[in-house]
Image (spheres, rainbow, N blue to C red):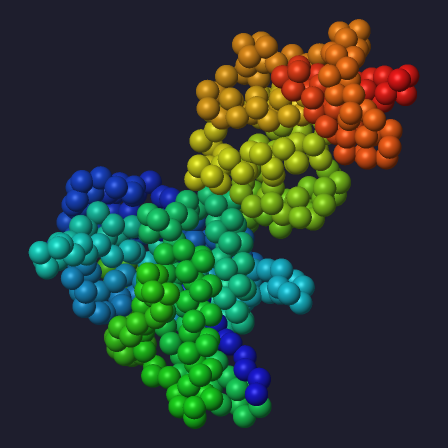
Length: 476
């Protein structure tokens, strides 16, 4: 039997507007509970909402970046359901006339480039946040109520957990590039739900769609999809079917757990929000937003390959974040060796960033400092290995590479007369290694060079040492 997994994603993204969707309360993460609230976002009687133009603009930017068509007229709708953190008893959202539709985002699947369809992007407000205490009480913080969101709904074009992860990574990078969201899952500014079912391609029999919630990382999304894929296939093999339900992901046991039956659109009793008049979106405004879009990740990757002659892998890594790509280009302007810069950023710099869980913007040094370090190496003032030590000091202290080298006494020894004396002493102390090398044991040469480097505390110029050692051995 052959099976095909069908996945669609619903992604909620909080927008980086200054104020909330329908009022002038601050839109920022954190703060004491219930301090960023007003009668409008609390849904008090008589309070009238007013649509945030900046939120509408950010929604259009996202739609253009994701190759969507933009509606020429939008209205807001009321989505009715009960939740303790839903202040009005309904959520202001969009039903049948979304802001953006019919877009796509490309990923690199196993078979090559693949377009994942974007069915719709609509704007809406976020809800408050329920906090469950150890005593069994539920408290509600309404700071998040009314925060502007876009909901991105994909077509069911995703066929594996890995494809879902790649799509989310590309989406996150794109939204951060255009600066509409910080996409911090740990702060709830990017949240993803999964709809999944499986079809037996031989019989055509399909399982019912399962919705997955409580996914707090892209890895969790991929793992949960793989778990549900296996669960659906097992049921099909037994001649059974899944229940149409919502399940949550338990990331401790790596299993999904049933939450509730899955409702339908009719349950929400959508109705036009009469307090918010429809908005006409002029083509001139869309063109202005389009003209001001920054270079997007895919276009930048192609340019890096073309302009800097970088391999596709390097270009892909360096354009994963806007900040990293800027850091790279600013360094290259000062260093003029794109491949060397790429190697250092992709190696030592990214490794340290990942180990410490920090972003490029958190670095204590800038592109000019990395360029200065590479110049010291290229001018043979320090060795490559010493350069790595200098970089570690730059991470720790933020000091200039030139100052670190002076303080530590790490200037490279390139004086041949000085090095000849050290080489002669090392050979005198390791005569057996000289004999071994002459007898064809190549490892002995590496040992001798290592002893010279040790004697100079790693400061000797490796190329000169290698030349001097070979010359001295030949003379013996």
